[in-house]
Length: 70
Image (cartoon, rainbow, N blue to C red; front, side):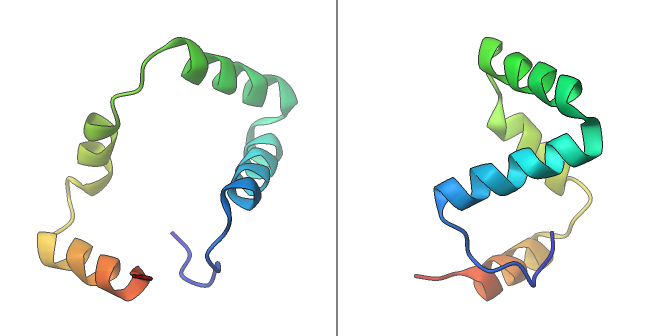
């Protein structure tokens, strides 16, 4: 993830994510991807495991502390 991106509102995040998907995948594949997400339940725990599986826990927490806005 890029650290230089400022915190985005939900609407800004949606627009940016869709623009990125469209740029990388094209419109047809972006629409197909969105349809897949909407028709199948998403296991966010499993996705998180896959994203963080090779990262040390202290590194994950360090990044979380750097990005915490609480």
